[in-house]
Length: 114
Image (cartoon, rainbow, N blue to C red; front, side, top):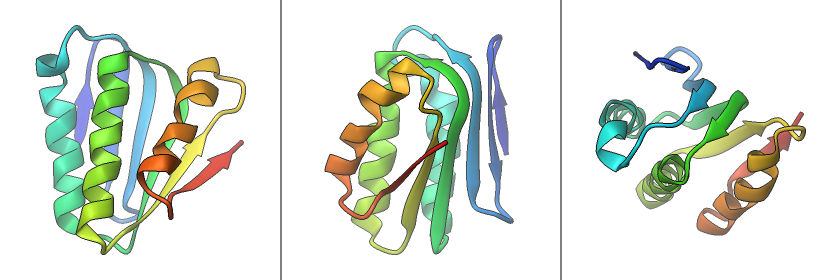
């Protein structure tokens, strides 16, 4: 599964249970995130043992996008059947500021800085 926008690309690889986000996601309003929400909901429904969320190539994510990621983490936490690993790039400022908050939403979330 994949979602492509003008400046971003979100791909789900079911073989590795990896969601890879690339580019710059600057859409306006949560309604414009529907395709990404559907992809993430599909991932949750698959209930893999471990989900990897690879954000290392995501240069920018709007506050609405951060809200979508937070909801995704909460859904993973609530289903209690999947672990979550978030791969992040330390040199990308928004990730340093925002991703640590995801650990507050899910105590077992593993945040890997590269």
